Image (cartoon, rainbow, N blue to C red; front, side):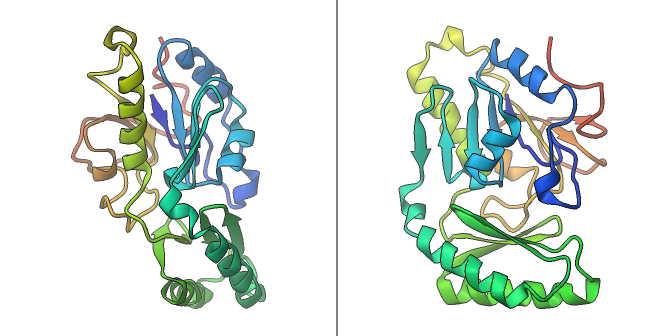
Length: 242
């Protein structure tokens, strides 16, 4: 079982730092982890999502999969992307200085990314925010992606949550007997349908999760893969726990 965090295990909130798991989410993950491998793949920093959720014995992937930890605590990271860490740190500082005068803008520095949130900014300033981030991306050879009220800088490497999901599956299959992988023919992914766009794998919520069964939270949208739908993260129905 693979889960996103924001919009899936947590409701979307105006302040990203205020996001918390919805009632019952942690308990459901603990139950699932006793039955099959469980992973949480988030755009948040790895330390952030790990601390925020606090469920032991599962995989955590942060920064859209550029780094992750296994249930036993083993750390993995994309070494090619790690070269960009100091560049991202500098870009975050420069964007804070440039955008600090715009009310409602939050610059979030992650180890493998810089997310600029403008949900609470005036609509007539969004263009200025986007232009500043795109300029920084072009200057520093970083990839620019957009999402729900956020524009982000990442290492310019062909990697995302979908590729991370497939990496984890192959990692598990190479180290686990087939009879111990009850999900090997049907992998469930729970994600919000309006997550980060402009990724190498195409529109979010579909091709990035190719080859999986998905459970999507949020309003109905078309998707090219097998989909089950829940109304919201806090919906009492639809948690795939037997």
